[in-house]
Image (cartoon, rainbow, N blue to C red; front, side):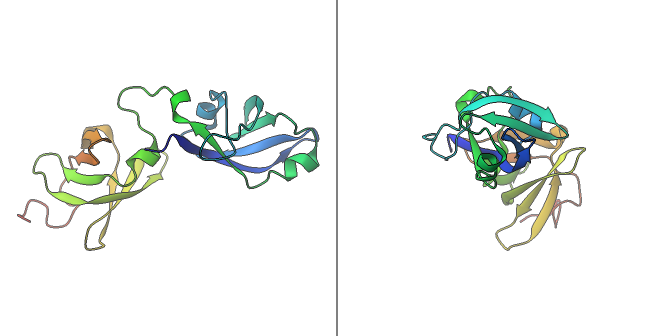
Length: 174
């Protein structure tokens, strides 16, 4: 499991004093607003020097130490910022999306393996898991609480309770 996770990308400056606009790669900019320290690298060795953050029009606006002009801010455009997972207390049943990628999707009742969770697609109402079978067939599975029996990050498996028709040959012996 990676200790430092991608939080978002600096996409532009905001104003004339070097404030930066971060495109959040998280549930919401409000979630990232609670983070007190960001890093410029995936090992947590280059502290970004966060001074302040605020939410504005679906983005997170940041002030970083040493960035006081548009020119200094423009030099950081395209940079990815990272957060330390230790700085984010998760509630039971909450997971980082990056930890779900790569889990084996298994039927929670029969034990049948459907494939590997390759991507989490946000749709607004709920996320959708893109699962790819060993044969390369793709399935889209709605990530709603009553259809997920268990998520075992350490064991590398997610146990699903699919409705008929989501996976081919539903109910047949594999």
